[in-house]
Amino acid sequence: MTRKIDIISITRDIIAAIHQFKGLLIEEANALVQTDKTALLEIAERKIRYADHLDQLVKTRAKMFSSLGIDESDDDAVKSLFNDCGQVHLIDRDWHSAMTTLQECETMNSRAGVDIQVQSHYVRRGLEVLGGKPLHRSYGANGYYEDEGLATNLGTA
Image 1 (cartoon, rainbow, N blue to C red):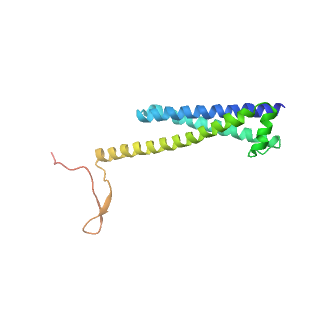
Image 2: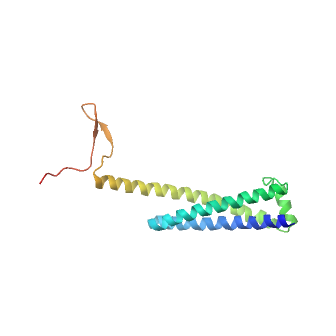
Image 3: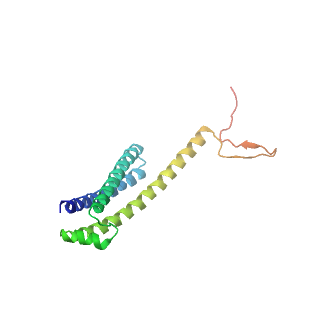
């Protein structure tokens, strides 16, 4: 019975970690809007730790199911195990809700990645303009590459 209780406990831990991860992604979205780079770096580190922690919990849960001879992809067997412990609501309601939240997290994380790429592009482009670096290289009339720089020599002193 102890192993069954451990599975219930770790399932609750996974559900809680998923909800915490969503909260972190909401923080990240707010930091992106405010372009708070310090907060974004700190959030990135926390995201890595949360993802590692969640991954470890999922692996531990899988080992627990395996030790009981239960295939965790067999919904009926999992429901039966949780029902035996009076915790079927944990699967029927909480686990399915957490899986929906996890899909939301995936969408939020992808959106944040796109936002970061866009912001990074604008920063790189600004540096090109400020530094007078070429936007691109193209062929000139002579058939050779020519740099089209942004900076213009205004004269000499």
